[in-house]
Length: 163
Image 1: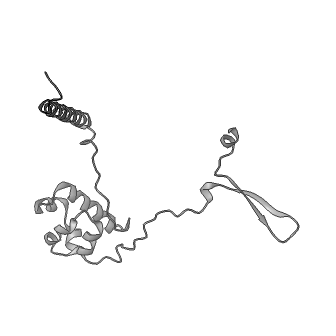
Image 2 (image 1 turned 60 degrees about the vertical axis):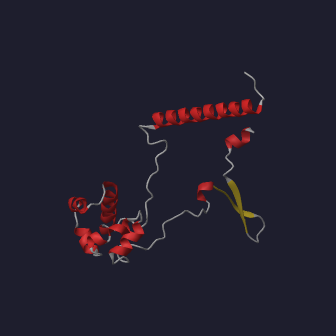
């Protein structure tokens, strides 16, 4: 039991032998040195490969293709458009910030194009979590109470309960 605490299980002795008399070398291969397939973005959609706005907006996702008509399908017009003008065009804040972030990454060739999923709030967000949980519990208690009263009424109508 204590031996596993002293020497981690991830250390594996490796013996390399030749056709000679005995083993040639002894070494330990750590777990961090083993071959693991890391998930890497193998996407080749970069500044050199993307030449039109439709492809760009499709690759970054989040349904940004719906704004294709605002820029008349021109990638250069999109790149030259500042945030203020995008706001005047009617693009909402969250999407506009996402587009501007990807425009910066695309122009400076910082990252291959891919979709960043929108975050999902749990329990209505951090600030409202207590109230959302309290309301959920109150609704559950109310439903349980109504279910109990309905069951009692049904039992009374069947003659199982006499009050």
